[in-house]
Length: 112
Image (cartoon, rainbow, N blue to C red; front, side, top):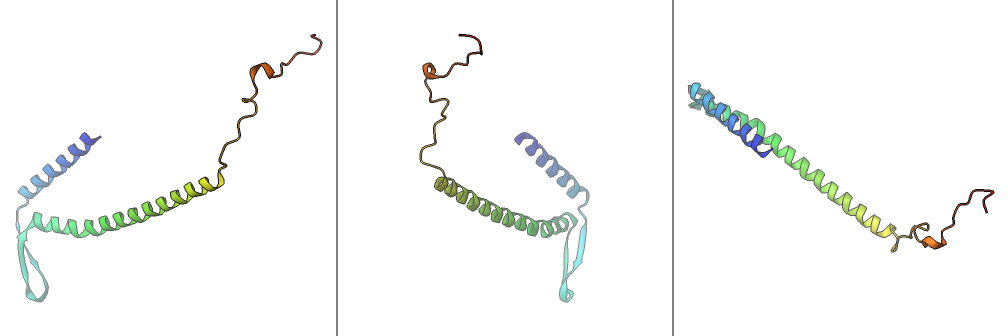
């Protein structure tokens, strides 16, 4: 599975490099107060991607951390509840505790 993950990332990286080489065009971006930014198209697209991806990544990590914390708390409470409610010694199975010689033998009717 790790090999497939690595292969996928290598393919994404190669596709990104090919895209950047083929689209290396200067782009003029007008910012506030007459400020102008001259940059390349791949850099602008990378910054735009990060501007959309990073907030969602942070949201995902925060929610995952919160859910993990709640799950740990619930598991700890369940373990404490089991420790309190379980008896110290479990009752032995009554059938298994009878010695084989003392076990009743079923005899069909009419057989002596």
